[in-house]
Each structure stands twice: as C-alpha cells, then as structure tokens.
Length: 287
Image (cartoon, rainbow, N blue to C red):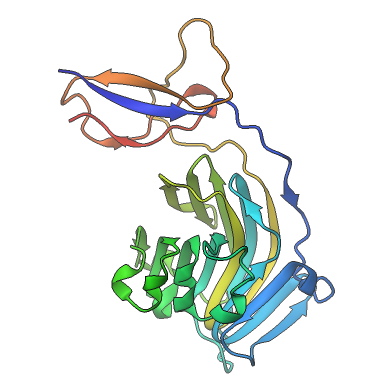
C-alpha cells in the first residue's frame, strides 16, 4: 500500500502594485495616516521627526488607516522605553494584522465601542502577536476568529498557536526592534530582528484588513513604517528539489499533484522545496 502526499502550488500570482511609502508617524501627517483607539482618555502622543512616542496608561491600539490586502508585507521599528519614569513598563510590544470586524462594514464602525479595551478585540478577525506580554513573560501568536462570545467567556477565546517564554524571545528595554510581517498564499510570517518566530499556514487565510500597533501600560516608540507587495516566500530545502519533467505547462491557478511514498519511508514533518523558490504546503508525511 502506498500513501500519497499532496502539495498545492501556485505558479503565478498576479497582483496590483501596492506600496505604502509614507510612514506618517510625524506630527504633521499623523492624523492623516493613523487612528488612536485608547481605553484611557489621558494617553499621550509625541513626536521626534518621524518617530511617534506613545504613553498608554491603559490598553491602546494605534491603527493604520489604509486597508491592507493579503499578499502584502508590513515593516516598522519599535521600542519599549524603560527609563524609570512614570508610565514606563517593559511589556507589550504587540500588533494586529489583517484585522476586520465581521459584524460591521469596516473596522471603524465599532471603534468607539471597542474603546481600546483588549477583551473587546475578540470580536475581530485577525492575526495577533503579543511580544513580551504578561509583564514580559510570554510571546504568543493567535488567530482571532471574531467570536463575540470570547468577550465574556474565556473558553471561547482563540487558542495559542505559538508561544515563547525564553529570554531570547522577550523584550529588552530601550532596544529598537525591526518587525516584519508578511503574508502570501495562506502563509503569515512574523520576523523580529530578522528571525522568523511565526510561520503559520492558515487553512482559511484572512484576505484583507487593517494593521494595528498594540500596547498597554507602557511607553513605546514606533517609526519607519512601510507596506508593500510580498515577494515570493523563501523556505529551507530538504536538499531534494522537486521539478517538472519534460515540457512545463503554465497555469494561473493552483495545481495539485501527489508524490507517493511507501508507509514508513518518511516519518517526520518536513518542508519540500521546489526549484524557482515556489512555496509548498507542509504536511505530515507517510508513516
């Protein structure tokens, strides 16, 4: 008996050219490009050039006003400031990605009701990375499904899909982190200072939504924001590249094919990479 492992490939992905080149984190442009959703009315926002500093006495989300699409990458630099001043706390350099409200026409329709209160964000569909959360003891990744029951019922809240508790993946005070979030063909990846800490293949990928920089009880800085079309994703290879034999047909839609293995031939979860840097799904191989 032979087992067939199936990969789904997309050979061409045609998208419009989409690029956000204006960071807008300066005093002159801030209100044009950003929206503050804060639980506390006495939050403070100040500027130094194109760097925005946020003092958040309670939960706060800094939303980018442009709606993003799947297939885009976001990059920015962020720092959690701890200089012993009032309001300084080393915790919560978080972000929301492709956020949407499934029960509203857009993200802004219930922004006043959410009011920066974290539990009300369970009403959103989005990808969420909490870097250095829980007083800088955890870094966690979740996919929110927009289930409003999660506002009141902890058992209805989304599962933790990835978690770190080691010091290397927690916050360092006053350190500027470079953050990159990319999505393409169902994959969402989070990079911190060049390290990919989340690589999530979503069976029902989010297609569009907004970016939000999230924090609470802290003083944070953010700068150098940009967004652009995600290039073809790169993956490590097993050393056994797959390729077409004979004439190569061209398709503008997904194509599925199977690679047969006898039971027991492969036992681990592996990534097989095609030539030309074409991404593949990751599957549990035959056992």
